[in-house]
Length: 122
Image (cartoon, rainbow, N blue to C red; front, side, top):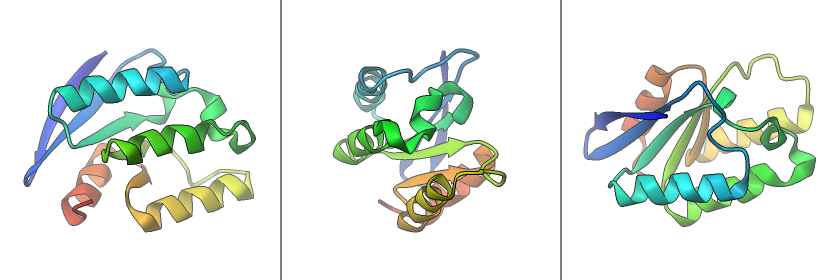
């Protein structure tokens, strides 16, 4: 895992680059958050492929737990993936609501994540 740093105005944004699963559990999320927080990052960009698929199954409750951790640390999150073809209505509604609130964003690219972070000071 490597961290690519982006400066967006006053914000220090960490883009996590990995070819492995980074968040397989809530504990992994806490470890990642702690490391990023310690390094002074304000926002995080993470590819959907680096998050366990349990996150996207809302019945597991993992998405709520993980997103609560990001809220507690006051660290914005952008998850990159192709969310246009989601078959689950509840997941699609969850993504739309998250994007409206703006603290957690589901986007198609790093450029879109940075654009959203530049518009919103959480």
